[in-house]
Image (cartoon, rainbow, N blue to C red; front, side, top):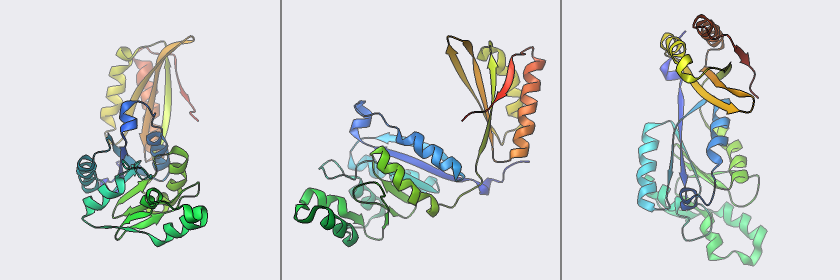
Length: 255
């Protein structure tokens, strides 16, 4: 049974920061966002990593928000001069920035007279925007239109996600099942895998090779929103592999 196309809810992620592109900081936010979205039935359809350049952020944001249901940005909302994500989001929506009174109040309670001009930068929100709760530490993020602007610090970003999910129109969650093939390379399994993929164009079938002290092979991951159809496709895949003379095949549970 094919999944209706209008049941698919999509999201793009825009990772912002020179430190990510330089390799000085390793991004883990994309992985965490992808896992979170999968649970609530939203497909992560595209991800981009771009530098702290205003025009590039604006152009990427406008391209993504017009193409997908939602966009999540991470990074660039701190207190330093190169934290320009709020400026870019405001420019993309052609609105002004203002210092949100709730954020200023939070800052006053935390820092008192130490609310410096640099810290006040973190209180800036595009006109028309709403706050995204930050249950971890520091000021909140914000949302405007179909864009959610979150922190780049992983633990803070994960906390903010808990306030993003309920605001999204969830689709049907994707279910995945994994078939482990041992002792056969991708060249051998390619034909039966392709045959099953052609028979189920509404599903995602991927091959992920592994190598180690215990041998080599591939994990074949099948994804669908229809659990019953998925079970049938997995049975077909195992049968197709065995018909091709590949016997060391079994479904495994992936945690």
